[in-house]
Amino acid sequence: MYFAARREDRAPLDAYQLVDAQLCPARGKGVPTHWVPRSHRPRPTTLDGELAIGAAASILAEFGVAYAHEVDVNDAESAAIAADGMGYPAVLKGVVPGCLHKTDHGLVTLGLTDRSKVIACVGDMRLLTERPTAFAVQRQSSGLELIVGIVRDAAFGPGVLLAWGGIFAEAMNRRVLAAPPFDHTYARAMIAAIDPKGVLDGYRTGQTYAIEGLAQLLVNVGEMALACPWLDWLDLNPVIVNSAESVAVDQVMVISTP
Image 1 (cartoon, helix red, strand yellow):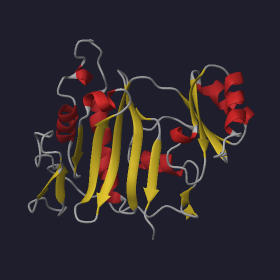
Image 2: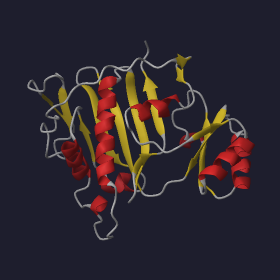
Image 3: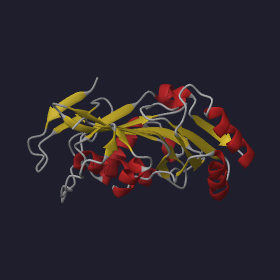
C-alpha cells in the first residue's frame, strides 16, 4: 500500500512525497539542501509517436543515467562486426516500433558467444511475427538485477521507483517509490529499504556491489523526471549491479501526447 503525504515545505518543488510507508525509513528527509531545478528539456522529436533509434539512450546520457554501450545496426554482418568490437558474450535486441516489451516477443537474445551465433540470431529474429526494422547489440553484463523507473500521477506528480528484478523479484518482493528531488543519502535509504538483509552489502557472500553508483543513478533519474514533464513513463529493466558498476541495459521510454 503506497502512502502519500503532502510536503508544503518542500520548496521550490511543491509536490507529494510518494513512498511505501512500510519500506522507506527516511521519508521526507531527502530534499537536497541547495537543490536548483534544471530547466525543462524540450520534448524530443518523434515520428508517428516513436523516438528515433538511439534517441532514448542519448536522453539518458544527458542526465548521467548509466546505460550500457549499445550499437544500432540494420543487418547481420553489421551486428557481427559490432559484437566483435565489443566482445563476447553479446546481446542482440530486435527493434520493432511500438513494441514496448521486447522479451515477451522474442526480441532479446542473451549469451551469443561468437559472430556466427550473432548472424544466425539476426536471421531468426527476421522470421518473427514482430519483425524487427533494426537491431541493437550490447556486450552482456552480469550481476544482480534491479528495476528503476519513473511513473507520473496527475495528482502527485513524478515518482522514482526502485525494485528488485530477475530472480529476486518475487523472492524479495520489496519496492519503494519516492518523489524527486532527493539527494544521495536519501537514495541510499531507498536502497536499504528494498534490501533489509544486506544482499547488496555482501550478506553471506562477501561480494561487494556498486551501491554508490546505484544511488547516483537514482538521483539522476529523479532529476530527469523533473526536467522532462513530457516523459510519462520510464522503465530501466534491468539495471545490472555488480562490483564495478550499476548500469541499465534496457529501457522503455513512453512520451506523452502533445
